[in-house]
Image (cartoon, rainbow, N blue to C red; front, side, top):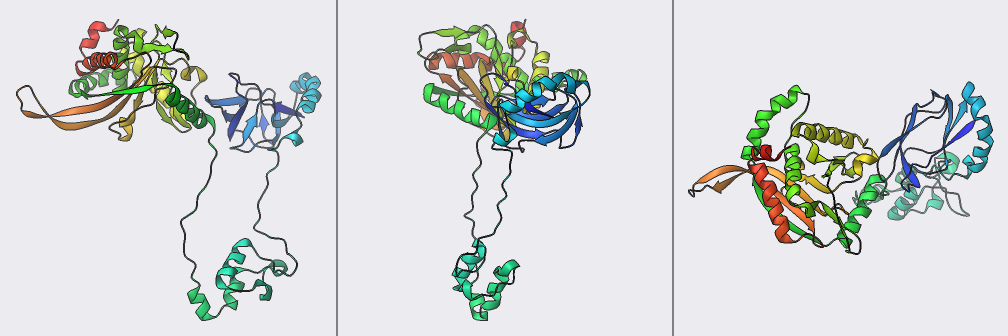
Length: 407
């Protein structure tokens, strides 16, 4: 027998949430077979088995918080693995005993009260109902186990007048409390830190989408032949990278005491993804070196992994600027919070068909997207952000101009 000790996952992680057990008690498993999925504040991680054998005990239930270096599950090792691991078993069992783990037992609450001197045996709900009906429980002969007074016993003891008068109203004042864990907890702390440490300012603008919609329609079929779904997002990402070439300050980060600014050559552009485990922001590395096709492939890959909760730590690290697409959920305008230590983020609204005036003052229908920027006012001023946005906007409203700038 051997306990599998939850290993040090790295990056200062000291605990994680048990999301899903992939095995059960008594199940045969083989070396390197995934045993459990755990969620850190960075990503979803699969823990594999070190040996082949039979699972004999799961120390945590799904939803529990497991501590690093504590026993995760126990197994009976079989074959050659048992001989190889034998010297390790005693030390590991001494280091972390299952009975020392506070999660090894599950307590079940039963709706039952101890009989007190001179008092009837009844549940809290029955006692409350008795008070409302003004019934003395000590005078009721309970029909339940060991003389327990049931609700039906109260009804039988009440007069017809009392029963009609004692209608219990349905209330809607219930509530429940759930712990904030994993990525959701990390996001909460990170956003609070960003709001209170980074002086935000906002810039908003409208982008005419008609030309971009035509460009996407023309390219969509050729991308599909390569097995790539083409959305508007790759255009926004590539245009942003081209604009960053002219405005490197928007792709920089300031240190805590505002004494240094670090400029990044790589444009690692993040995408806010509404995943099943909460909001995550994976980023596409080195967009300045990628074609539109490559950006589209990577975008689809990260969105799919994010929605499945299977992004790696590398996907979530190293971002230099971010995009939040609230439009896919129907949002129009937002004031996004900077994903610190980055210095800027943009929120994309939904596309709307709206009336606008042309150069001859004639009213025409135009596809409009509202975009909202937030910038770090310690190193980016409003004028710089507006100029950067104007260049980015020009690439999107005239997509053919991106060809001249693309390597």
